[in-house]
Image (cartoon, rainbow, N blue to C red):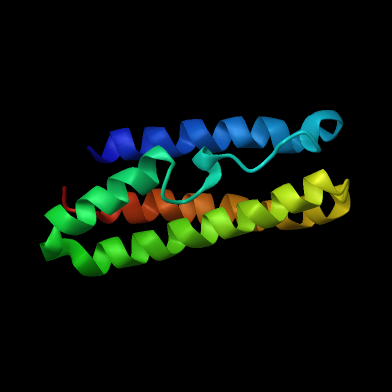
Length: 112
């Protein structure tokens, strides 16, 4: 299951990467339900797991917090894209990458 969760996250993140890194199309990205932390595949799984893996509540809480931070930063990046503030996007991208790596590390630590 861990590999599936990581794949969900990385596939989604890679799609966002392509859009954000393309200044010509960056402004066209908009907030969609999939950008909401509870509507992406990982977010949906986290909601389900909160009710079914109570023994891992501490690990899941850390993962949920990191996941929420990731999506909040993404919202900020999208706002910058829509406002053609590409310098801001570039400044925020290292943190976006860092949070993505942290998500993968937290998923790998789960006992599922």
